[in-house]
Structure formats: structure tokens, C-alpha cells
Picture (cartoon, helix red, strand yellow):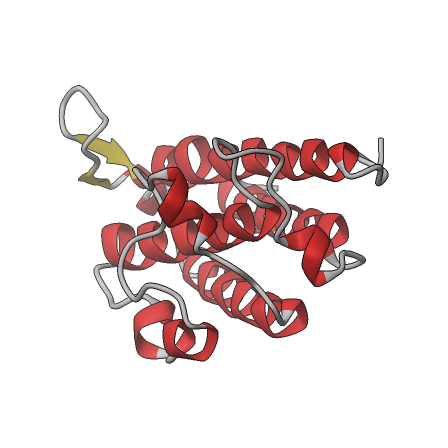
Length: 175
């Protein structure tokens, strides 16, 4: 398995784990916040899919993100711009998901975009430098942006979902 195939498989596993962690939740459980300073599972899921969409579309591929072109913000009554980084607690608490199956459709569309993009890359393509504000040089290879920054970031948030499930008396991590 080459790196491209590994990344494709890893994104599929990541999305499957996000769906598994959320598919049995009620609207109340999805939007539960333990206190004024923490985010809900809904916010985390929105942030995860928006981060993937934003970074892989705009930063890496240089195209408009699916959220902007697909009418998703209007469909869900959510902000058209951004993905939650720097949100105040009030802004984060304004993110609600009332139709999880429909929202997971957005996540699947983002995954399809990512998979299609990665499928067309060679190992050498993964080393192309792209602007990345957090990098000391201001640039990172695509492989680092996709794997180290986006994927590991989302896995961390997936673990927050497990924690929020457990705070509600639900099964946390399946492991």
C-alpha cells in the first residue's frame, strides 16, 4: 500500500468512526453541552467536516469548498464561512444539528471529494508544498497537511465525542 492509498483508507475509517460515534444519538444528545465552556458533539462534527472541506478544497486544491457550492449552510441554518476555529462559547453553542442523517450526507460528500482528489495523486504529488500558516516556513507538503494536520486533528475531536457521550451516560469509545 502506498501513502496515497493509506491516506484514502484512513479517511474512510475516520468517517466511519465518526458516523459510528454519532448515529445513535438523539437531537438532544447531539446538541448537549456539559457547561458553558465546552462544545457539543454537533459542533465537533460540524467543525470536523468543515475543516476537512475547507482545508482540502480551498488550501490544498484551490477550489471552492462543497459547503459554499452545495447550499449546505442554508440547508442547516449555519454560518457560510469558517469552520469554528476561534469560536467563542456563544458562537459554538449556536451550532445545532437537528437532522443528523442529512448532516452525515454532507460528511459523505466531503469524504467523496477527498477520496477522489487523493486517488489522482502520485507519491511525488504528496510532497508538493502548499501554504500553511502554522508551518515555520509558511509551507507544508500536501502529505503533512492532509495526514498530520487534518486527519490527526479530526481524530482528536472524535475522541472528544466519545468523552461527551460518556458524560451523558452513553457508551464512549467502542474499544
